[in-house]
Image (cartoon, rainbow, N blue to C red):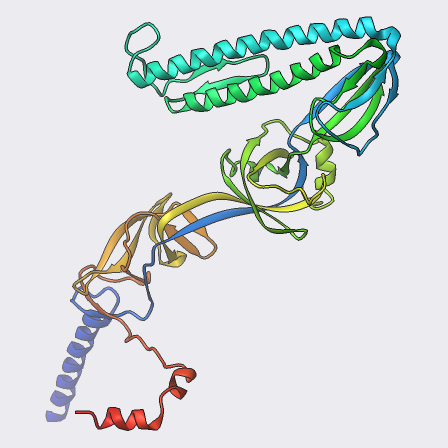
Length: 420
């Protein structure tokens, strides 16, 4: 009888011990505990970027076209590939066609003068409006409206300046002045052509650049001139197109040019560029792109004079940049909904906390956090933990390097061992 009593007591005690072990050590235990966390990271604030790497093509910044009637051209004085100066002779014209050509140039000169006058008037109006906005009143002396309201100001035949806020008036004025300088330059070229004698009548280059082609069509010659200033174009599929915004920073590299040429996205088209002449060149460097494709032009802040038109260049477009941010392993992110999420942290008093964070960017296996963490914070892994529980981390191990070991001789060891 005593034997069975002993066995029964042993079973009861074992059950109690097992139940307490379950309550204490299982993951769902409600009892307080201290966690040993082997995986953690300390926050170091930095700037993180996401880049889109693209093959690109060097192209002229702009193309000018000189049009001449076939019957008025005596001979061309330039050929395709020639570098021409502004005002340089492109073609000698027949003296018998002088009157008709002069009449055409006079009409162009009058049109340019009218456009100059219009641009000068618009610049004066913009400057007055800028002063009024900065003073808090409009041109009529009344209080200005909402500065964020869109306002479109037409500054010429091919100039549209959009005013989005007060600070943009300066940009609009600069753009209008740039257009005015371009019109003045064209008018001076026409005036120089009109000043020639009938026997020396010639068509002059409106720009400093390169003769790209001379074509004949429908009784006219078309002389296409590439500007000496160069920019870069690349082509995107629709998925990439949505990542690109005007003004994004671009770093451009070439094996044939030293250093990096910085630039920015100046324009992106909304119309497919499947028939672009530069797309044919681009496909030599990236044949996997699938149509429809969209053209993106990159304005360069530096020169690429050593590269010819059509040359390949590698462009890294910064599609997202987060400054003063922390980087955390993606699998440590909890309860993520869009950009909102949470992470475990170690509080100043050594306890486990759960803090909300903002995740604006993902980089490979990491999440970049713009809010919620500070320099030096300790982030813990995503294993389930109780908020407020104590935690301890592995002791940091910093082994000496072999060079530092060799730098200390035996006399130094003796000195340290006998130091009082």
